[in-house]
Length: 181
Image (tube, rainbow, N blue to C red):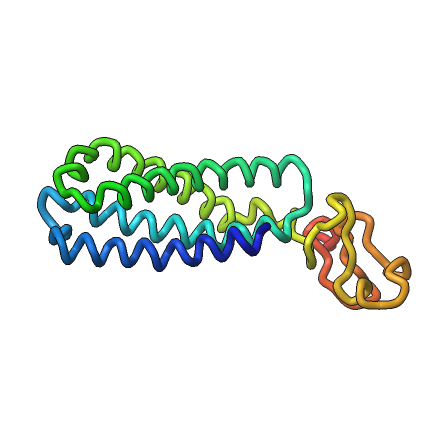
């Protein structure tokens, strides 16, 4: 699921860039009254790029309320991005139709930018560091050292109760486990 979404976002970047090239060629969208179309293409590419990497981040997040909140925010960005992408693709054949959607396009640009910036800010602040695992959370509640899962008996891992870092294989402890400096 996560890889398919990652790949879809990756493909959408190329598709959006081609759309921008087409609009530029057909209508000369840079500058003047058409500037909002150029901005829409830029914001779509940026949103698809952020979405591309949020799928990988979500794949390695421990299940729970914070992950659900992250996925809700991610879905808000997806819905707004797809909505603007649909408008741009369906109306790009008719210049007057694109211009008639100016207000809706500008509103969607604003929404996309708001959701995109919020997700990026949360990641930059480290809001999700405590949720990240060394491998996917396939059991929804379990965590295992990447080395121990390859061993014959994964139950032999010496795991910290706070951060679940495997001390047998020297994985770093989380912030909760580090002694105050």
